[in-house]
Length: 252
Ligand SMILES: Nc1ncnc2c1ncn2[C@@H]1O[C@H](COP(=O)(O)OP(=O)(O)OP(=O)(O)O)[C@@H](O)[C@H]1O
Ligand SMILES: [Mg+2]
Image 1: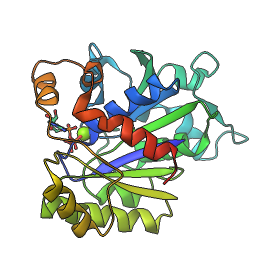
Image 2: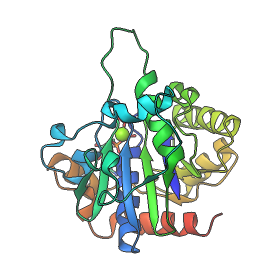
Image 3: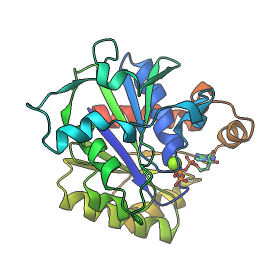
Image 4: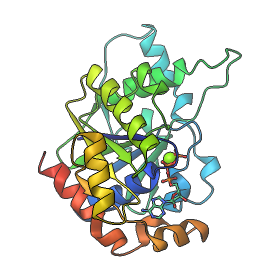
């Protein structure tokens, strides 16, 4: 299963993806997290030491060469680094999970993120997964990047939304774009939800009920400030991450 997360800036995408990754791991899944945000933050959220030393997959020139047709065939990639030389250098293992960072190719072209997006698109569409493997893609805020096809090959999109009008507006734009590129399942996930009024506000504004709600959590805020991995916190937000996993697995 390949799951991506999107939503307005700062709504909690990286936090929720990290918590979800922890839940998948607890359930015996082999988890690969891909941080596709040009300002990556997943490594810090997971407590990876020296995150700046992670080699970005944007540097994976081998995939770019294949894309330009300079090599024969159309290989598939296995996410197990023991058997996949191409991916091995770009994956770090941490706390029983794997992490890759997209990064950005530095070119003179203003604003063109094409080469790294090509690498990511190939990775996602060519990665062969067993049923015990899950790929979680943490994405840049907003909607601009969705037009670049980086969520091709994704099975489910989670759109994080907090109880504010502007967050709902962005969430609805993301949903529209995701429908246009034919993502099979699209779900809203509520964050910083305090009470029933917040839940009802979200449901009315979105025209659909979020599949899980995360409360505003002092433990999460404190963890971020003190550089404690969010995945090490027990009973976070009344086990919302477990609810989220269940909803995903039930394929609602
Ligand atoms: N449920 C929550 N309770 C308390 N704090 C939260 C919660 N979810 C996220 N936060 C905090 O909000 C801030 C933003 O969260 P996060 O980085 O996950 O958002 P993001 O959507 O990934 O942001 P960006 O758009 O910059 O990538 C962080 O400081 C995080 O600790
Ligand atoms: Mg983020």
